[in-house]
Image: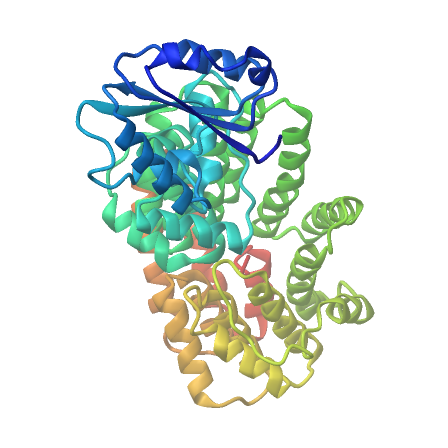
Length: 498
């Protein structure tokens, strides 16, 4: 009977329906229409019986209905045979039924056939007692579907509220579409939900708006209740501390987050995997190559054990290793070359980037590798880095271009494009470091810009102020040290790009 549809027509209302043989109703079709002329609301009980016998959807008449109206309705339904019954009813033309007649539907109803019906269905389930939320993939197709639905108004307002879809959208936009983050934040500047405040902070950090990021995060702390809400706020905050070159403050926040960490096995595994990144960055900022190397090697093993490519972790090892090899010869040239071989991208014919594209970081690491090993920067690499400088997040590609300029002659326009990208993306510390190594007079101007931003953040989180004062002294000494000692001091001060 699956996919079939019955029309039960009767004269005289429910009394006419009583003449239908009861055996016929024991195994009803998937959809049943009870169309009886007359008056009253007596077909509902029969509709319920049909549902109990296996019908999926029952449509029945209510009020005063005439035989010509039933004929009109039946003809219209047959004309719209490809539509679900509730869609037919919703779009019923004027004149089919009079004002005194109406149709009711019981059973399964397809309330939404939009591309985001999964979100809206999850909302319905939550509203009716289900505890299961919505599991969203992080791929571009999911992002594109939700973004379009958001702009077209296909998402129910209740879905946006119950499912935290604004937070999901910001999370996806951070991966795939940075300009959308700016649009959303401009249109929705005020919010009181912890999850959205946290995602707004992450979005602002991605856009280089660190003062705004700290502001949103501080608001989230003010209203966060319980470990489940506090933990992701702590972890978002420690990343801002690392951006501000404050490793001890970041470590304190990481320690404070540990008692709040989720306890379900799947989340524990995921958070332990992320911790490898955080611990590595803390050690980089401390200037501790051995500690950073150990944490990232461990994360690489975990990534491979979980079936991942390990490219992201290898990229970090190569970029970090290149800086340390340049000043100490460790890791070895052979190890650097092995990591670089894993990441080579020269066979990719064109480079178009979107969102938080990990290929940009791979390209940056390959450029650092060429510099540390004294190898020429190939044309494909320069072209790819140039394309990356026109991306919404120009930082990684701009750093890569300047790394190429450290050891070989490249066109002046590449250098200007790179510094412009770093400035527009608010990568002031990275710009200061690379300008210092290029002996560019803009070095201290960039660094002063970084200090200004850090001071704005520290005013929001005053517990970071003591470390900020100490780091400022260390940074200036490194940037203004003799040119032959400058790279080594920058590495020891933990100022290399993350």
